[in-house]
Image (cartoon, rainbow, N blue to C red; front, side):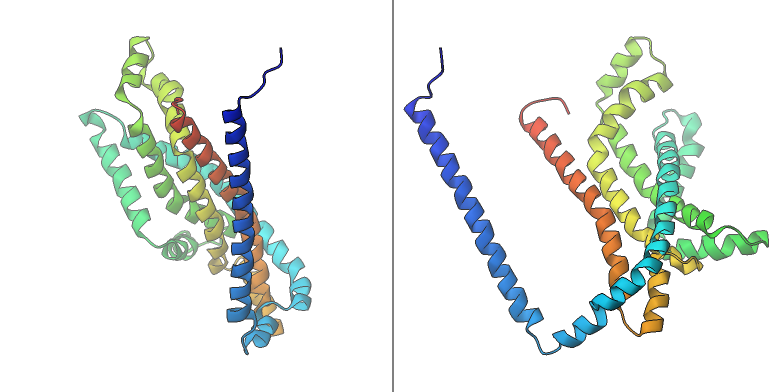
Length: 280
């Protein structure tokens, strides 16, 4: 037998269809209104021609793209190494900060001091201290990619460690007690029970930290490495035009957009599961 929807159900479906169509029309109208406002307030202003020539020159953008792209690959290299090192260091610091018992008090104090210092220091100062202080201390020239990765790791490990620690502490104590009752040791409980639940809870804020790290790797040009920002500065000095900086900015935006959209999708998925009563 084929199911025939009732009149009430058909009425509900028609209402939802009308609401969906209304939402689309409102979105289109608001987008057109916003575009008109931008045109009247920005594009149609007397100085727009000069701004377009100085910042959005297509010819200069295409000419500077190969050099900026080559520097951007160095930013990606530092980002890739930093993603690995930050993950390792941050998990280690977070676990140390959650170690129970008075015997681990010195380690907890050291870990807390580390997170306090590097969350308080501006990243640009960490770059100066690492990039110029360590080579001076060792009296030898070091690889700039290594120094940039080290600076990013020191700074972002402090932020990520606190996020992971919050996730660990958010796991209900009954989970630990149940695991210990099953005969699991402390390390097994942490690895098999606590950390998987904690990481699932803190994935959205971790992705946000990753987006911030993607942007901050652009500051490693301070060390003298020819990354996207320094390449844009060189091209800008040769053309007396700021368009290469816009090209570098667009590359970083294109790098961040997939992560941002993935964060929104995962946060919406978690919200849906919570609202439906599922276990997060």
